[in-house]
Image (cartoon, rainbow, N blue to C red; front, side):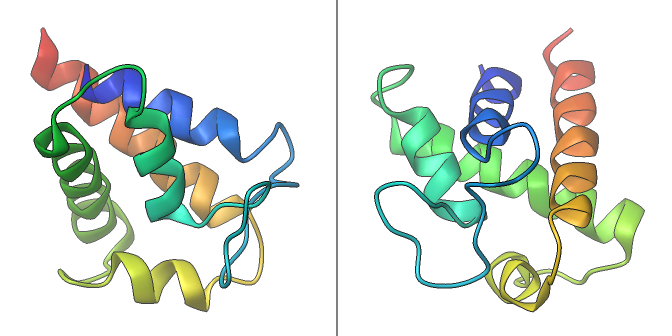
Length: 101
């Protein structure tokens, strides 16, 4: 379920990140956390699932991108392009799929 939430969140950004923003999300544009929250709606009624998806993204950031804990929001806001966002989500999806086996 967590990998599905992360995949759906990544899809919300659009194929080229045209719907990703590093600040001020709205109905059509998402930061990492609003994408995860919106991806959870309809797939799970548990707030824990959104938290677990965010945690998996945080694990990917710490272990593979050397971003330290508590930094998902600040990390998102500091990005100037979509590429690091996509790479982190892809790694988090990979980790979630491994855990779900």
